[in-house]
Image 1 (cartoon, helix red, strand yellow):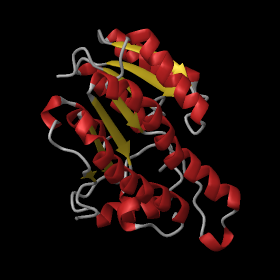
Image 2 (image 1 turned 60 degrees about the vertical axis):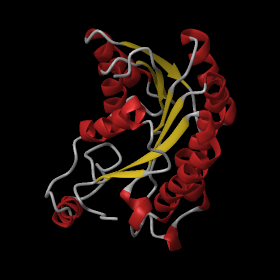
Image 3 (image 1 turned 120 degrees about the vertical axis):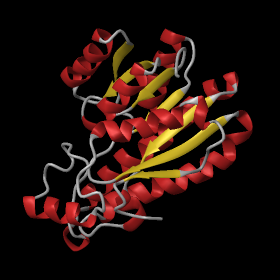
Image 4 (image 1 turned 30 degrees about the horizontal axis):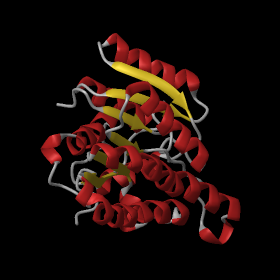
Length: 247
């Protein structure tokens, strides 16, 4: 389904990003597994892909920095000759009620979750425009759709990604570049490990399907949007949340 395609997945050394990288590779894409400071995790993802017969390399870059994002794209194009798919997955949380949230907690989350998508998308557009083909997929969250107490920074960053997705889709559609977003519900990852059992049980109780998602279930949605089967879909938000936030 993705044979001959080249993909970058940011924040791909673990969790949802790792699952996305592995699934894209399983469907034929050569995948750049990006990490900021988790070389061992990224190498493990690459090994998993290569052991299964796929193609992957690990590349370090702090994509919250424009220069690093530009370098990541350049190294990818230099190595593979093109760039077809960018999955903006890099993210972090610093949960706190706004009254007690530090400016740094706000800035780090907005920079990591939102500015990194600007950086990577901006860098990727030149090669995508040149080849008149591209898929940009932003990993947002149900928190960006409905908000979440104690997550004003995270919710703002993820809501910003939704607006960014829709605006960019209108800008680049004429060049055969689609831009979509996937909004996961609760997934057992490092970012949700800080939740108490009470909070986890409450989240499950609010989810009609009565469970957390598997990282692979988020990856399946991304792979679909990255494929030619989704060639007439752009500017959309696909919620993979078990019915938690129905639009």
